[in-house]
Amino acid sequence: MPQSPDPLDQLPDDVAAAAFRRLVRHLRHRHDAQNIDLMGLAGFCRNCLADWIRDGGYEGDKAAARELIHGLPMDEWKERFQTEATPEQLARMDASLARNPGT
Image 1 (tube, helix red, strand yellow):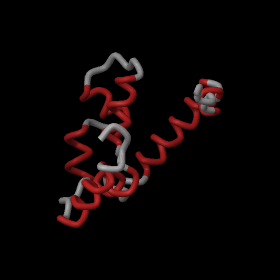
Image 2: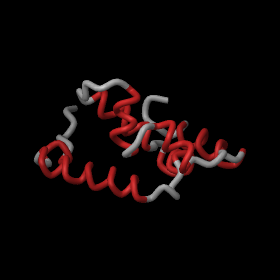
Image 3: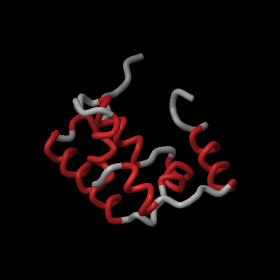
């Protein structure tokens, strides 16, 4: 039985790109939204977005992709904004990741 097309695939690329850029800029502003918390709630984080742009054809390496998403080099971002993950955060992340497709 053929699957019906996903309406998301009908979204014009310029509209999808604008929404993506808005999401990334929002995350650049919201440093209080820790990657570990994003992973625990949604199963993805800023680093995932960096991986996904590479999967989509971005020619930069992993460090360049992360800098693009974070708005500054990863080491600097971690030093300025990342807090130590608690055991509870790690457990939420593990449970959330188990719900991702392909796991």
